[in-house]
Each structure stands twice: as C-alpha cells, then as structure tokens.
Image (tube, rainbow, N blue to C red; front, side, top):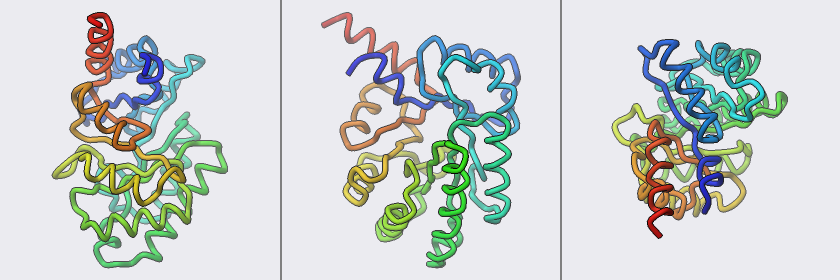
Length: 226
C-alpha cells in the first residue's frame, strides 16, 4: 500500500447541513493536495465544488436522497440526473428502507435499476447505500443478490447518519455475497488508519470518511517510522 493508492480509495466527506462556502472550498482544496478520489457533498453545492475541482482529477460525489432514502423513484432519478448535470462524477443513493422492510423487492430492484442506468448513461459511478444498521442479515443478502443482477459499481454499508456505521462483519458478508462482481464501499465511523485498513482487508474497495486527512497523516507517520 502506498499513500497514492490509499488516497485514491478515500471519499472525503463533508455532509454537515451547516457547512459554509469557506469550509467547502477548503475541503476541496485539501482533497486535491492529498489526492483523494472524491469529495462527498450534498447536491446543492455540487456546482460550487465542481468549479474548484475542475481539472484536478478529484471528483464530486453526490449524496442522493440522503440520508433517509425516503423519496420516490422518480425524485431520486431526477436528483441523480440533476447532480450529474451540475458536475457530479459519482453518485451515492440510499435505498428505500420502507420497501426493503416490507419485502417489496421488485420495487427495490426497479429503483436500483433506474438510478444505475441513469449513472451508466452519463459515465458516472453508482453506489447503493444499504444502511445496514437497520437491516437483518437476510435483508442484506437480498440486497446483495439484487445488486448482482443490476450491477451498480458499488454497494455501500452506511450513510454515517444512521444508528450505526460500517462494521467488519457487514463488509465481510457483502464481500462473500458479491465477490469481485460489485465493489464495496465502507462508510460511517471510520476514523483511524487501523479501522480503514481493517475495512480494506475485509473486502472494501472504497472508504467514506470525514477523517481522510488524519488517516493519511497517520499512514505517512507510520511509514516514516519503519
């Protein structure tokens, strides 16, 4: 593992509802300095962040129907396309947990298919947020099965706003279900290098965190001491 590889696996997040433009600009500029894969931000500020990041190689990652997932499919598709139009290079959307809990798997598959199709049509990376803290093991497995059929780029553990975040057990379960056919993003509560590396070892291909700088600085310090 090198600094560049680790940085390229990190979505550096700033999803606080009261973030101001000064904070967002610094967030983007720091992401460029460290070489993170994306900055994950709320949709209303995608245009602002895109202008700062243009030509840097760092992408805007849009949070769609965030954090509850309680929008209609039509609303989610529109929000996805609007985010893409405004400059998003990746999209993380939250599944409709009410439909999951009611076992309405046709609805869940249709929703996932339509959002993934909208992303693919625009050459944008798609990530499906399960919000595992609210799901049973069987529900997680069923969502993985649907993802295998629909083929989003990533399935993701959590929003970071739920009752719990990423766990090693969830990442391992998701990896066991999808293998190398769909990538996995671990997010929520990942605050240290040790935790990030454990998630990667468990099968995560991407890490969502607001502590990317601290994680990379910890990595660099560790390397310098070896």
